[in-house]
Length: 277
Length: 263
Image (tube, rainbow over all chains, first blue to last red; front, side, top):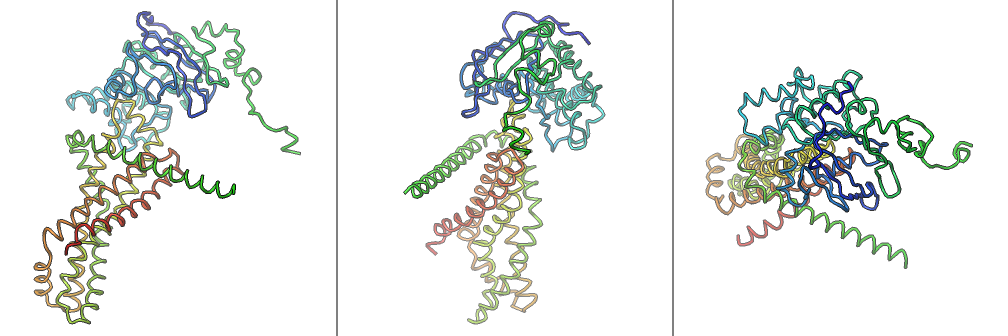
């Protein structure tokens, strides 16, 4: 691959801006004072350990949860969750790929991809059919158009969900763990597809993932989140090359997959002899 | 003393929980009703739900209606015979069905059959992030998912209750006329003279519409507010049957008192 940055991100108005965003579920802090800009046209990867708050970050961007503090600007406009009309107008300009696909189980693959087009456009049935089949072809599943979600594998389901997420040619595409559970071929193809979609649509992409090799090959920049008592904080932001040379102990541990480092693999527990002897 | 305080605190917590639940239920109902003008513009979604909820409940409603009518005919005949009023059997069967048993038993069966299916469907959609996916696609789940189901249940209930009552009358006729030998002419004429269209039939239809509103809205609320886990969906499904049935029986008492107190 190695085609990261094949379209240079423009540096005018950022596609997304977090202004000192904090988020907590009840009393449990998840995100701690995050400030971050995502440039138009770039593909930003967000990495970090499981449960650190990466998915929550995407849900904040999509307006599915409300920041406890701070504000978010999306595609040049403030994200206002209380104003359904403006929120939905913004959401029509973004695509979100859920971690487990979230396909509608009572609709076949074709109808799943057609769903946003039917809801938000008045295309003729023949044009709609062509568009849906093109999207399915892009993810390699035109042949699965008539199958139900229960008849395809989890990985295939996520590829159909990817086709659905980009059905409306969004300006900002959010991917939640797009590589999880994919076989090596699908993984490589999906990674290249994400990069290609971003460039072809002139979109901005944010990819939440754990997969270091594939992500570093396609991302313009990578942000690394690390846990802390006050919630996840941004510990590194830079190009894949800059992160490879990072001296931050958390980044080094994460990229190398070391057991020893600032993040403990084992959860705090009683002494071994207390439990086993 | 501490134990008593704990109990009072526990009771207070329970009451607050119930009030919060009622408030959330009322808010959801208001949200669904506010979106109905837009929901009716997509009648294909509503008719699909009328078909889904009504058609899937049809078999149990028809069979139950027939059996209730058979029992009603038998019990009614035994009782009326004591007073030499067997000819009033048709009237007794019809009034019992259109005023009470039709709307009430249909609503109880509807809660168990269609209500649980609605709750499980919405709960599983929530657990599978399908509702969140709708939100993310700028599609309002209250308008797109809950609205058509609400209207579908509201429309299907009176239709099912009417079919239940019709089959019940057939059951009463089978036992009374075909089996025991009550005069067919008297059976039908007593019924047609004694049953008032406005006081009996329309009131029965109004009852079944109120029950349809109650059962469907409770089923949708339970699914929408369920915890997105298998246990959460399971609890919500059970709660739909319990709350739906109690609501039907409670509302029936109130409606009966309001509708038939002057008779």
